[in-house]
Length: 479
Image (tube, rainbow, N blue to C red; front, side):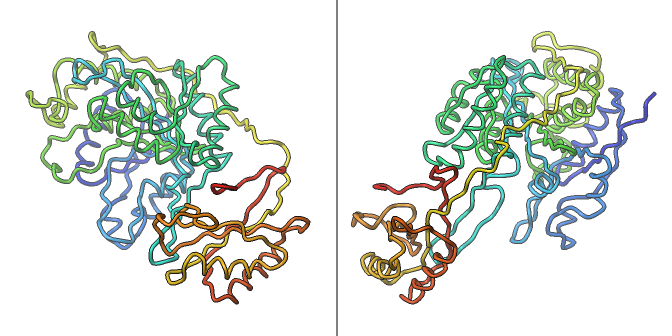
């Protein structure tokens, strides 16, 4: 018999130790060839002064085993504590968050008995990069970062997942009618990659109507791929519609390392009562078994779990007022049914072939020509009127720049603004070179010096570029 596969296990906080014990018991009884290596992460690590909630020895274990099975953890309230999940995902490059959301109707009642979708969420970029600033008393900003390589690999992962799991369609959720550059890039990459998979249907939705359709008609979807924030929201909505957030497992996949977990929290209010549902973590563990090449054990456990709930052995969150069983009783019921399959619910099968990992990328094999096309200068001002600021900026523009426009919170207020527009103390002022002048960093530095000489407080700049002659910045109304 081959050596058992070492995995790193974090028992977590709150209900974590109870549901992890139940999950590992089921895996052991099912013959899963794993050897757990336990680590401490979460609340007690945070309270030692470690702001990440994960000590060095835990990192060492994860690098060694390449797989983490993690129960929910508690992040202490108050400032200074970083999200352990976000830290692990970004530090270890776990770019793909995969969340199946399945209806178990009529065993667990819901309004969508045909629902069977998977959300593939980008896990590292978007607003979750956590890059924020406050530069004026009135306004804070959060930077949304979307990259072509980051978009490529999550979208390709979604199509490869669909092909591996005999899924027929991949849908993309974006908001590129508003965020034309960031969400626009993600959507463009989706269309490029979709063309490489003619055997899989593809379509896209603006995210607001897409989420409305998930809530109303989830059976229309198969695999959904989307950006970080949208995926976080959509997956919780879908899990709840399917029956309960407590049933859903999650895989976080990287090139080298993977983390598997339940999507729910640590529920400290019911910790120690023996009533927690281990199903979410168990489903995460099932995904882990598939990932490490033990699909037979995954299939055996999953079908036993389906048979268990089909037989009416339900924890309180699933029973919804009916007779319920506790955590250990539920785990024992699953073990008793190992080797059995459900009769009402659809039995599960897992592919025995490993998922293909494509190294291909579709970036052009050249570096596009980048041309500096001006700059947006951001000001702090809470005393001068719009016309007073504009007069100073017209002078500061000098002979080589044109003062093009000024916005406040993204709304153009000069020239030809509206008196009704609500104003903050944060102003964006666009300057572009006059015809015949080539923009340079030196010209911009001299512009900033002239703005300072007008007693205006500039707080940052964002340079404007064209790539291969194409404008790569947002335009204001009237430009």
